Image (cartoon, rainbow, N blue to C red; front, side, top):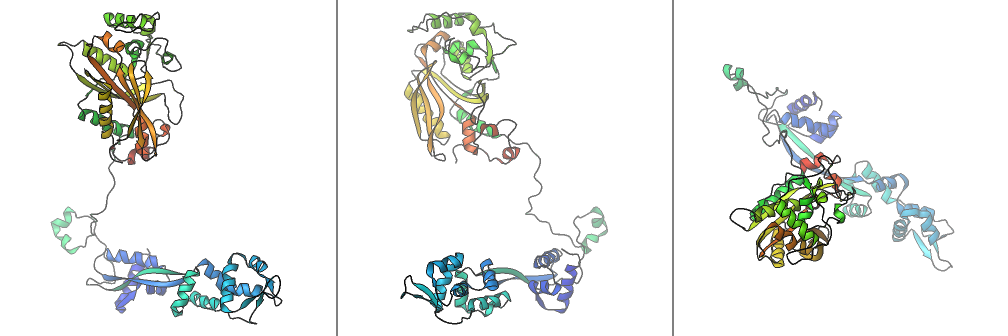
Length: 498
């Protein structure tokens, strides 16, 4: 906005009752948007002027219409290509280019050309000696700003042929307002103590406050999507009556991570290619000795109705420290504590959500560390039906109602099931977790009663987070490639709402 443009508008209104901003733009040789910008500045100073919005519709040439004005209409160009001796229609269409079909049709309807079928092949010949290119002449009138003189039928035809387009322009009709003045008074933005003390505030004009303005957003922290989804999972477990297990021990012994779960010492998961072993301290030495002996026996020679694995169980292997490969190691500790608590066994529900570590090859769906969500229920007489029913209720609270179960193998559960759900967004079945009933070889050495069964299930935290927030590569969720803008602008997590 030019500083003097506002005063020029006001001075013009001093001598004119009304004026359109489009006329002012022509009079002042200024862009119409600059005139409108100056009007907004005037309106900010009070009721100096009144402004009535009006709409102007005008016809303008399209790119194709301007080409007609410059070179002639399609039908005139086709007519010009027809020599006195005639021309084959195929050759004419080729010579006429992209607009030959329209031009040929229009020239035929005008009676300018004809198809002579008395010869073979038929020839296109001129039917008249001269023509008047009415279309070009009419579009030239539009180019000169006289489009309102065109008959409505021609306007409709030219629009259909994409030679003309109608543009709508909004302008304002200005008139003097109740506070009209030819100069602008500077508006005050702040009410000061001095203004109140000397009464000057009553003589000044203040700039109106915009109470709809959003203002600057306050600086604040933002929750990572993983934390949002974790909070939602945690709330679901608490609603179902679960207690949270302590999971603050990332370093675990092989005994609790593998042996207590009835996983044999020669299992491939104990290989360094799958597990991160710790060098300092390399071994653990504090174990419940009577429990350790029972675990050794059930592995080596069996017990509790089992033949065991029949190998030489070694304490040195069980003592090796590692980064836990699953939070089920924590579940094993909690079940042992539950079996040996004072007052005897009491039914319990446990859950945990925390990090685990696997020696994985990094790719779009795998990291060396990730989160595991685990639920465990211990009670008398639990069956596979109880597990399936609990899973349906658990996933229903996640907004997932279509479940399927596939038999699977786990060293420490029997029966075992992989959990699949149908994802409407992806339009396919996807694996979301693993589940099963803990084996007697795992539970009875702990001291749990024979009639007590334990059902459990687990799933990752990263996969539902990626699905919820539309992330295709896990490295965009965790690590140095995370988009902080995504973290800042990510919506709250409601897993039961799409």
